[in-house]
Length: 338
Image (cartoon, rainbow, N blue to C red):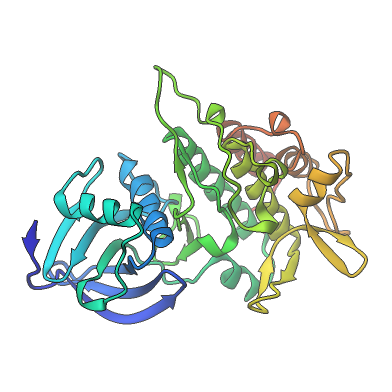
């Protein structure tokens, strides 16, 4: 543990604010690199848990992936004391925070509050909703985004991480660079507050055999088995199926709380729209209208989306199979010049 010294980062401006924290654009004083700094005040056990879940997931990754947000460092602060956290950390300040949170003794006094500071990649293009809905549909963009998302999810599942809240709001856009020299921006899967790191037991751990029971996520992207409370990493495949279908056909709905237009696929029942997972839970034999509109969609992509959105998780591809099938679709069926 050490006393707080001259800050390593200079906060430039606030770029986002949510229930649990504030995100700033910042500059690293030594290198001048632009980074994102997320400040979370640990004022309630639930936001301590969300923050630590994000830390546990991102710090467990031993290598970087271009389409997964990178955690540069995480610092825990209380008053003038600060401690850089690392994977498997057991420093006194960290143990004190966990114990205090478990006992429900988190203080509301700002003079002795705990703060977690996450330093991560800075993404200058907003989120996937903002980016796509402010532009005309592009088959090339759709193809690039599908490949990037498939690669990111395969990487996370290889690292035994189930995201549990995949949605366009949690997919950020970086326009600084693109993978493989493509003329499209880079996607970054972010916001790991609901993620689960599955224990690596055995020589060949399988994230698809890690069963979870806590129903969590965002309604319009939740798989039917998540609503029931018995699911595996295949729930991430379902969420990504919702996202890809909505992206390709520009299917949107309006969030009743924020009145924000969001990408998402659903079932229409009169004037009501029902999340796909909820509808499939009630009727596993429900036939989804893919494509929903009379637009061109390749037969291969149509089959893939149907498989990803199967009510039966066993019928969905795993993340490695999904990545391969997306590559095959991109190579064989999509015209990159349109």
